[in-house]
Image: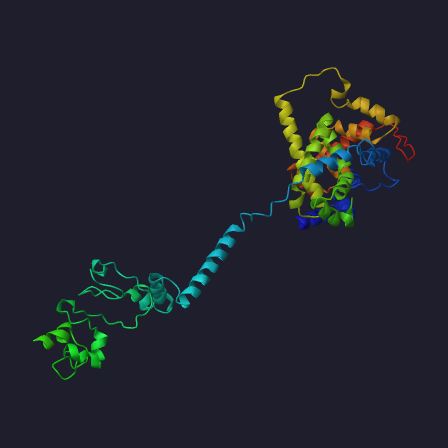
Length: 233
Length: 192
């Protein structure tokens, strides 16, 4: 637009318009541009120049009388600044993306540390090769056999129970992960598998089932029958 | 015109500086009032107040130099003036006999006054006797100081149409003051 205005101004410059416009038009352009006419111009043109000069004269007191009211209205009409408490609608998407990124970074860090719940940790293991969940973190399946039977005390499980020990339920690794076996029905004490694997001298008085080389389990892990049945038969 | 000071004055006014706004107002309000007076008569003060309220609300979003600012402001003024004309057309005001509500003075009376002593008000009254589009264009060019291109943008015409309207208006004015003796403050009288 400025280029257009500049070209227009050049087109109407006094030097060119004197050549193109009629004398009346050229004089009119000088008057409109508030340029002084020469003495050679007709008196009617000079009178018109005075009229236009008066119309564009300096401001009068009456015209400037309303300054105080105008400034007061200006101060009252100023738009109030936006409250800084809540970000504007433009910043909301940026804030949401930043929050999602922070949450993802925190999730990945927790997964790398192996501190996620087992299902999530398993998912992270598959997705980003995070450490697999440890067996101790597995959630135990509820089973009716877990309920201790009559006579069972402490860490002992009911006969035939294949459930985890009390320690394993609490998440602590058991010192003896193997299942215990009892022989209450035979009244021969309660040798456990660990006891049979490491027989001591006190076992001899109650049977030989635990003694290696007497038909017992050569591997040192006697079954329930071998521990007691052979000694009585 | 503020010329070199305009960018700083505008920046301060946009930030809410009352003194900067007052400087803008003192520089621009007189030509605005004259333009509106020629176009709308006695409603000029009311329309000018509406224009400045609009300026106060939107000055923070304005970008440009002093000429662009004047074009922006007078475009707003013209729109509000048109709204005022439409409003008055729907609800015409019946004359009450009060001299202040009369229309612009007749051309003959104005010329008679101009013969004796030419003042700003008299000169504007003489211009106001022209057809409204011609009077509007002459004021925008002579009083406000805009070029033909800027005036064309404000009034929604081509620069050529603006030039033709201005020349016709000046020709009519010349005919009305022909043969008269005009005395201007600070200048000697011109005897025709």
